Length: 462
Image (cartoon, rainbow, N blue to C red; front, top):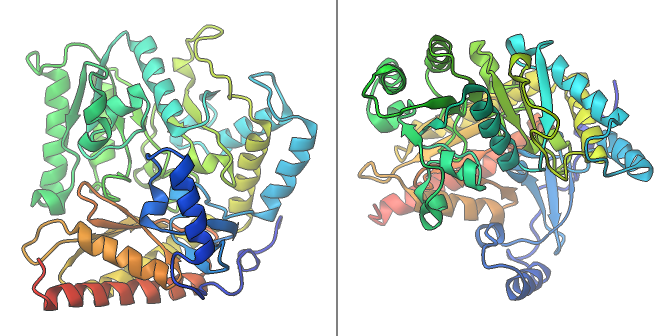
C-alpha cells in the first residue's frame, strides 16, 4: 500500500478554536485583502478565517485555530490537503519540468491511461481525452465545442438548478439567474428543462422523473418543440450548487435512451461528483449509464492543482490538430498529482470508505430531522451530502443555513451551503476523513441544527 494511512494525515488537535473567529491575525489578513483585492471575493465573507495550512481533512488558520474541513475546497481535495503520497510526486515532477503545452510527457500519458482504467461504463477502452484550460468551466467549453462540431447543431439542452461554470458558454448552460443576469446575451439557443426534484416539486419520485423525461423527449422530438437544431444534452448526475439534488432512479437511463433515439451526445458533468466523491469513480455509475462526453476538473488535480480534462467516446474524435487548444493544457505536476490521487484512492479503499462514512453522516442528520421539522430532507451519495431547511411556513430557509454555518466554524467545523435559495447545508469533506473526525464534526453540526432551529422556532422567526 502506497502512502500513509488516512488516520495519519490530519492535525491531531482538530477541532480546536482558541480565539474568537475571526482571530486578530485572520482579521488583519481579511482587512488587507479587502483593501487590495476585487470585491468579487466571496468565501471569507461567509467564513471569516485566513487559512495558514492544511493536512488531510483539517485546516489551521493564521491564529492557530484548527478546523475539520467539511467542504474540501468545494470538492477539490478528495485525498486531502497536502497528501504526502501526492506531494512527493509533485515535487519531483516540478524539479524536472512544469509547463509542456501538449508535448507528450510521462506524467501526461500515465494520467490518460489511468483515466481510462477508471472510465465509466463502455468508455473504458473506447475513449479519448483532451486537456484545455485549468478549470471546470474550460472543460465545459470543450464539451460544447465537441458536441457542436460532431452534430452540426447549436441548440443546447440543460436543466433548471444546473451549475456548469462561469465562462460564457458554461454560463449559458448554468441555470442560476444570479450568476448570469448582468452578462446577457449569452449563447442564444439554450433550453433549461425541469430536473427531477420531488420534494420541491411536490411530486412522487416516479412522477418527477416521468415529467422531466417527457419534457426532454417532447423538446427534441416534437416538430413544434421550439428547439430547431439540438447539439446535445448536458446534465449533472447530482446537482451540486442546485442543492445536492439526487435524481430519482430512472432519470439518467431515461436521458441515455432519449439521446440514443435522437443521435445526440449525452454530456454528464462530473466536475464535482467525479473521482470518488459519491463512492463511485463517477456518479453516473450508480445507474450504469455511460456518457458520451465527461467533463472533469476539481479533484483531478489531486491536491488542488489546477487541471481539467474532457473524456469522450472515440467515435467523436473528429477534431483536426488544433481543434481545441489552451495554453495551460500541459501542467505536468498537476497531471502527476492526478495520477497519484487516483492511486491513493485505490490503494486505501476510499470508494467504499466514502460510501460508509457518507451513510453515517446522512443517518446522523436524519436522526435530527425526526424531531426538527425545519430539516426537510437529507440526501446525497457517498461523501456528497445535502440537508435542506425550510421555515415554519415551508419556505426555503437560507437564514437557518447561514446560522448553522456560523455556529459550526465558531466550534471548529467548516461547512458550506448550496440550493436555489441557499437553503441547503452542503457537506463534502475529503474522502480521507476518518470515521472519528466525521463523528466529531457531526456532533458539532447536529448541535448547531438543534440550537439554531430551536432558537428560531421559539422566537417565532419564520
